[in-house]
Structures are given as C-alpha cells and as structure tokens.
Length: 316
Length: 316
Image: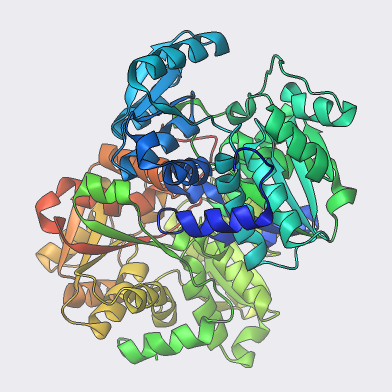
C-alpha cells in the first residue's frame, strides 16, 4: 500500500480493521454556538478518543497492518506528543515492544502518559536531527519497525476514519473542516470525505504562526522547513511529501488563523460545550470566526482533534 | 401533587413530559478512571444538559406542569446559579415571563447567562431574607408563580429523570451516587433508583464544609441553617423539609468529603475524561476516593451534576 495514494476503499478497510479497538466518538452540537456562528456545526469529538486524540486511529491501523515478522523487533517512533502515546498503546495491543524517542523538553504529562503505556523511552535533544539519529540507532540495535506520525499511508488511512464516521453520521454536510499540522489527519479526512461525496467541501485550518501548509499549497511549492510559533502545539510539524501531495489535490481551501482567535475559540468550546479541547482543535472554529461568509447558514462538520492540555498552563 | 411524596410513577410521568425539551445526556466511562478507582464507573453527564446542569430537568417539569392561569403572571424564583438560568429558559418555552431574584454578588457569567435567556432580573443583598423579600414583593406586584429550586415536588421529579435514564441504560448498577446540596437532585435520584430496583444502593456525597444533610440525616433532626464553606458552589444550600424527609427514608448512606479531594477529583475528570465539570459534581468521585472499600469492584453510577465553571478562576 505504500506505493500509491490511498483510496476511499482503503479508508473503509482501515475503519473495519480498527473498529474493535477505537472509540466511535460522538458528534456533538451546540445551539448556542450555532447561534453565535450562524451556521449548523457538527463537532466530531476525537478529544474523547483513546489517548485523548485522533492519533490513536492512525497508530492502531498502522500497527494492525504490520506482519508478525515486522513486529518481532518492536515498533519505534519519535514524537513529543499524542502520536507517541498512541503508538505505545497500539503496540501493547499486539504484544509488541514500543520504543519512543522524545525530546527532553517534552511536558511531564506527556512523558508520564507514554511511560504509563509501558513504552521504552529514549530522550534526546529537541531537534529533528537528534530525534532521527536516536531513532536510527535504536533501529540498528533492535530491528524495530518505524511508524512515522503522518508520512505513512496506513497512518493517514487510520486518521481518515474519523471523517468517514462523521459523514456517515451526517451525510448532508456542506463542509468538513479540520486542523492541519503534519497533514496526516487532514489528508485522511480529505480522502474519506471526497470519496464519500465530491459535493462536500473540505477545508483545512492552520495557525498563522505555523502556516507552512498554506504557503506550500497556495504556491504549489513544497516547503520542507519552517519555524513555527503558535500555542497550537499539535500543529508545529511540517507537511511531508505524501501529505503535501494529497492536500494539494483534495483540499478545497485552507485558512490561516490568528493566535487570539485560537484561544477565544478554544474557550468558547470549553464554556459552551463543557468539553476540553487542545488549542490545535480550536483553529477550526477560529477559521469560521474569521471567515463568516464562507460558512454562514451551512452545515459544517468540524474535527476536534484532541483534548490533551496541561491544566496548569491554560491561556485564559 | 404537592400533597404527597412523589412515586416512581411520578418520575416516569415527568420523564415523558420533558423528553422533547431536554437532552438525553450520555453515560460516559473511562478505563483509566476504572483502573485508578478499581471500580466500574458510569458517569451520567448532566454537565452536557441544556444550561449546563441537571437543573433544567426540574425547572422544565415544573414549568410544564403549571396551568395557563398560573403562567399568566409569569414565573419567579430566587437563585444565584443554575436554577435561575434553567427557569428562565423553561419559562421562555411556554412564552411566560421569568422574574429572577439574584444576589448582587453573583458571578458575571451567571448574570449574563440569565439575562441571555431574556429573564427580568432583580438584584438584592446576598442573604436568604433579602432574596425572599424581593421575591415576595414581585409576586405581590405581578402575581407570578414561585418555583423553588428544590423544595418543590415537580422540581424533584424532574431532577429524578437523570437517575431514571441512568438505571434504564445500565440496569445492573450496584450503586448510584450523587451530590447533595439542597437535596432536590438527590431526592429525585433516590426515588427513581429505589423505585426501579430496591437492590441498588443509593449514596449521597457532600462537602465536609457544607455537611448539613449529613448531620440532619445522621441525627434524625432537621438542621435548617448552616454556614457553608466549600468550593462546591452548587452545594451551599440547606436541605428543605421535603428533601430531608425523602432522603432520610431513601438514602442508604451519605459521605462527607474534604476540599482537597473535591479539587483533585475534579481535575481527574477533566484530565482523563476531557469533559468540564463543576466542583459540585466532583464530590461524588471524592467520596469513592475516600471510601475505596465501599465501592471496590462495584458498578457505580455517578451523577455529574453540572459544568458551569468560571474558567478564569480555576482551583488548579
């Protein structure tokens, strides 16, 4: 499957493969938010997914797709966040060892979560080079199989199952809107939604301070490096070649949003919906706030990507 | 109905009366919390109810039970919190005017919520006497019908519908546990659960700093006044004669919990379940934390009463 871009059928297969392992998360609505935004909003609550984020879908699909032989040396990834926890939990489901390379400056809450799932953690300097070097060294020593957080078609297909559930529950949506970091969730979402119906518009949302996807897609030239600066800690990563290619083809538009609107949108979701979402999830609502004419009176599906927040360091 | 203690049948009638107006809230579970508490916990999420609290059930049942004649002068209550918002919204559903007497020191967020539902607000000094005086003056002038927050059988029956839904969804529960403030929710819950099955134990939980219900029930002597001091702002009220009578008869036990355990339990729910609950909701989990032997390996239904929190003033 690594040779070609996944099809709608691949996402359906992923959905059936992981269905016994993941939560089928609820789609929530809020009359108050509908009134404020003058649109009908359908929130797909991946903050209520296992490990508190959609990442568990992709990690589970990737791990379940590996052969016994590929599992014998264990599974390895480098990640500072939700993907690390997701791989750790998914590996455990198949009785495989998980090796996680984490930057030494990762928040304690995330280190604790990964350790809690029984992973073998290696800390490294907080640079991509150090992460890759540390991972390669472990691969040499153990023969572990690497599962990238988003530059991996099995991961992308797993992430797409959230959008697939959303349009199956609400087939009459006009728009589906998701956050863009490395592009794994957004790529899977676009493949799922466009495969379900070409008539549904698929939009991405990104912080202005981490707008590599916007610039790559709008210019048609892939930007491999950028220096992100945003509160949305799940969206610091850069598109990969695979996600750039899919999003360039499938995305109808992409919006950049201001930091203050990410924070105010996050607070609105907490206050009105009584659920906890991380800043990365709130870029979507911020995009509606900043572009009301694009969403007014439409039925809009929104992927709430995760809910892992350090409660001691809230922006409000 | 005001003349006799409500029956299980009265709560079923309330459920059918209000079903088109309220949310049937989800029952959530968390493997992580089950592991921590070594019990199977079933959380009835009234924080996801309209107006963010169970109070909307009782207010709706009370307002829908009034005759057209009783509605002509409007509806009045005094409340600093969720009941005020609930009555305002419920009154609007029947096209009736809502008069709300609020203490002048109510949080802005609650004043705004009540005003947002179109209620006519009168501010008064923050004493029970001032609240009752202000309410009586308005009743004299308008003929409005008073709906007490909990010393009212129609309100109690409405509150009981949350527990009724919980045991209907999970008939094999061993225990149902709820918070005790004025006792409306707990009375309705006890009537519903014991009416459904005498075999299910019904426990109440209360802050140590507002333990009038504990002392009233344990001593058998009704305590009409106390000076509460707790972060659980929804549990500052005192039992009424009606709720004292029901709880003395129906409750299997009542626990008092420490402030620090309310706060740590609240944080656990936020962090592990990704939902927002107010401190009053967390006294239940705190009771399990402090009395593990009473709950170990049992199936425990927990009423999460509400999610209205001032995010600018969190205890963590």
